[in-house]
Length: 155
Image (tube, rainbow, N blue to C red; front, side):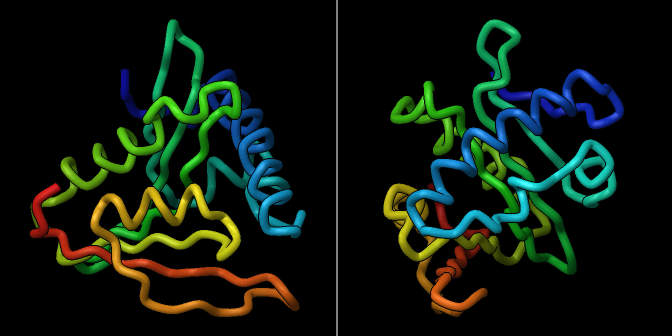
């Protein structure tokens, strides 16, 4: 079940932080970089990030989460994290589809980025109709790939 994550609830914020750490640890290994910001978040930094969060809950357990910001018709998906014990179950895809469907009205395009070496994430974004925009070096030898998708594209 997908529902909003309440960042004013300390228990939900703690569960989100734990989920981020285990999920981003896998990405850090894939891309060879442990400086992913989500690995170093605190409860305060999560509460003050300005992002809206949705979670995938199974039996009250947070198994995945997505966050985004909106600005002038653009939805920028900032985080997509799934508990490694729940990989390959479609949770990430369902969370992204939820954002695409929920925010389609009034949105011109969606943006997302991932580590260039994160092949599972890249496959997911391409499957969902995102188009690669560019690669850039965020840190020495750490490459990020950006994608965009038109909001009016049917998914």
